[in-house]
Image (cartoon, rainbow, N blue to C red; front, side):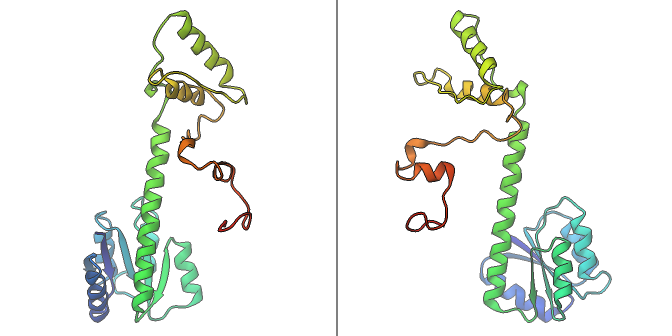
Length: 225
């Protein structure tokens, strides 16, 4: 379960938030001022931070601004009993994912926490996938080994078609290296900086394949958005 840092100088508010979130199964840690909040946040052990704006030593906006300059990627939800539209806008500009008022409404709090955690998880996964794509370099691709006429014909064909806009159909028995050939074509193409997207067309119903690959307009068919 996610670990949440609650930073607020009011003990009753911290206790209320702790009781609510621990009941939902979250692991909770508390900070009573901005300096302590920042120290704990920098440990990188938390999945979300609930951060009060008005606190001693360092206020919440200072803490948020400091965190936004790091690469911790810690999502922050601001909480305040003196919130204004201007404050909320400024908090969002500094990287806060949401803004809730004190005393917090139970349902609003839980929805906000769940949404912030889900968004953070998606962003983390997206970064991981992007890094995985970036890490695939020429040297890391499995080489196509062989000096027979058949292999030389394949590698020569890859070199000719990869830089073009031609569609390529790769056929062959299972285990002959069709996926490897596809990866080499992608690697030598003008799109090599982007991801190679694999789609299992056999798993998509024939009536949905067109919209799955090319998209559709809202209302094009029943249930389309």
